Length: 109
Image (cartoon, rainbow, N blue to C red; front, side, top):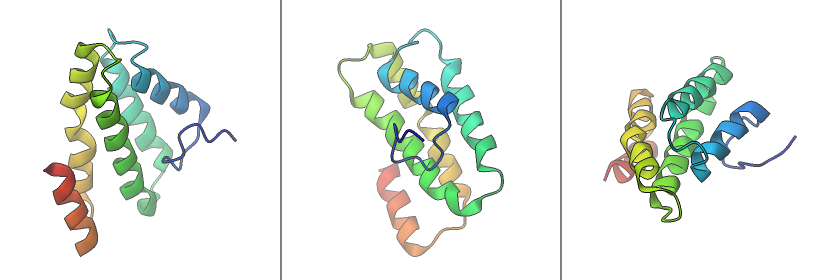
C-alpha cells in the first residue's frame, strides 16, 4: 500500500486523494472538501481509540502545513486555517496523558 502520507495510519487511496487535493490546493474553490475529508477519516477509524490522537495530530499538521505554504492561493490557505480548530477540538475531547495535554497546549498556542 502507498505510504503517500506517512504521518497518517490510514492509507486509503480515496482519502489520500483528498489529502493531496487539500495539501496542494487543487480544488481551492471547494471548501466542503475539508469537511468531506475529515468525516471520511473519522469513519475509517471504526472505534479504534488508540489511533485517534495520532490521526487528529496528522490532520492538524496537514492543515497547518497547507496554511503555511505560500505557493497555494491565499483563500485556500485561509480556509485551511479556519478549519484547523476541528482536529484541535477532537484532541481536546480525548482522554489524554500529561504529555498529551502539554502537546495540545503547544498546538493551541
